[in-house]
Image: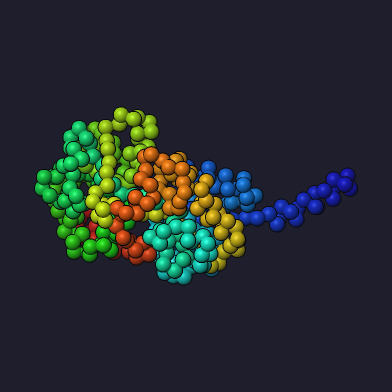
Amino acid sequence: MIRFILTILLFIPCTLDAQELIIYSGRSKSLVEPLIQEFEDKSDIRVRVRYGDTSQLAVALLEEGRRSPADLFWAQDGGALGVLSARNMFTTLPSSMIEKTPELFRSGDNTWVATSGRARVVAYNPNRVSKDELPESIYGLADPKWSGRVGWAPQNASFQTFISAMVELDGREKVKEWLTAIRNNGAKSYRSNVPIVQSLAAGEIDVGITNHYYLIRFKQSDEQFPVEQTFLQAGDPANFVNVAGAGILTTANNKNEAEKFIEFLLSERGQEFFANEVFEYPVTDPVTPNPALLPLSELLEIMPQVNIDRLDTLDETLRLLREVGLL
């Protein structure tokens, strides 16, 4: 009995001293839980995750301030990261970590780094429109020839970040004119991207503005799924690449563990998970190629040069969408 009690007493300190990491994740549980579990298994670091909407978690972190238990914020988009970075809530990341990614995929002050990319594309029904008929620029969809043929999702967060990027690139007035013209053309609004792709397949619309990975997932289940997608001319806003990314809170109690987690996300294994299991773009090289995705070098050549740090303008974007009657 004494030996048994001593064994328990010896075990308790080890349990209390176990490494731990607390993550606020705007990335959905169904998407990233397998990768987090793999990190736990390989690192012996216990991970506790609070899942939620990226914007809501960002607000929670702002409200909690120095009282927040979070060590790391893993956001669905760069805008939310920019909001916290602007308020000096992230610590500077090691240069060895930051330099694994192109400059376009990290903050200017090195306080957060992208972990994967999500590209905007123009999807279309090839039975109703040929690729050659598509405009060279996203602004071409405002032409009356596309009346009643375009689908978009103004209430969707990825669309709203896309509009923020367009404003950053071309100015508010030009984007307002474009939004108004497409609205007047009778564009069909959807709550999210999935029904856009489904409506394309059903022939209800001819063209849709969406993220790249939705169609890839449909094609995984049905190679004959009757929708295709494309990028437009190099540098066009249509080719905007938003990022998921992570930053470590200045108040983190487990900074070393947080750094190890980001290193894992940027490792070859982490990047292969994003490329081959959830069909997002890797942000580091080398990664086992996914034939459904462009190589990173080619993606960098066609995407517009957007300062992701300056996409913390959601309130202004929502105001614009309300002005043109889309919200």
